[in-house]
Amino acid sequence: MNDSIEFIDVATMQKIDAAKVISVNRNDDYHITLTFDKAVDVAALQAKPNRVVIENITWTPEVEIRRNYFSRVPTRGVLLTTRRRSVIEYNTFFRMQMAGIFVSGDAANWYESGKITDLTIRHNQFIECGNANHPVIFFEPTNTQDNGSIHSNVKINRNTFVMKSGDAVGGKSVDNLSFTNNVIIHCGDKTADSYVNLKNNDNVTKFGNVKIDLCNN
Image (cartoon, rainbow, N blue to C red; front, side, top):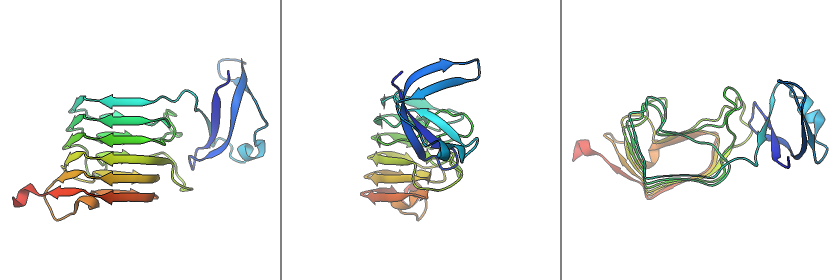
C-alpha cells in the first residue's frame, strides 16, 4: 500500500508512466490486481504487449560497502543496481574472474533491478579482475534498444587498477560518469584515460588519472 511504482519499457529500460499503489488484490497464485492513485496511460502500455514491467521504487535500498576483501570469486565481486545513494569504498577485489563491480539493470531475465542514479566508487583496489569481455567495473543493462542513458551520476575516484586485460570501466548507457584521480598499473602504451570505454553514453569526465607501466621501469 502507498508504494510508488514505475512502468518500464523492457526494450529501452525507460519509464513509460508512474503511479502510487493504493490497493492490492490477490486474485490467484499468478494474478494480482493493483489500484493506482491516478489514471495511467493504458494505450502506451498496451502498445507494448509483453514488453512492460513494473518496478517498485519505494523499496529500493541505499547501499554502503566498505572495507571488505573479495577474493577469487568465479563471477562478480559485487552486483549492484539501486536508484538510491550507493557507496563502495576501501575494498580490495582480488582476481574476480569477471567484473569486480557489475552494474546491471535487468528486465529481461532475472527481473531483479532497475537503474542507478547515485553511485560512488572510491579508494578501492582492483587486482587482476575482469577479462577481455568483462571490464573491471561493468555497466551492462539489458536494454536491446538505445533510447537514452539508463544509469546516471557515477563517480569513480582514487581507485587503483592492477590490470590483467581489457578495460577498467566499460559497458553502455551511462550518463554523467566521472573517472578521476585513479591509478592504472599495466604494461603497454595505452594512457590511463583510454581504459574507460563506454557505448551509448553521455557526459563522461576523465582527469587526473595516472598510468604506471611496470614493464618499462
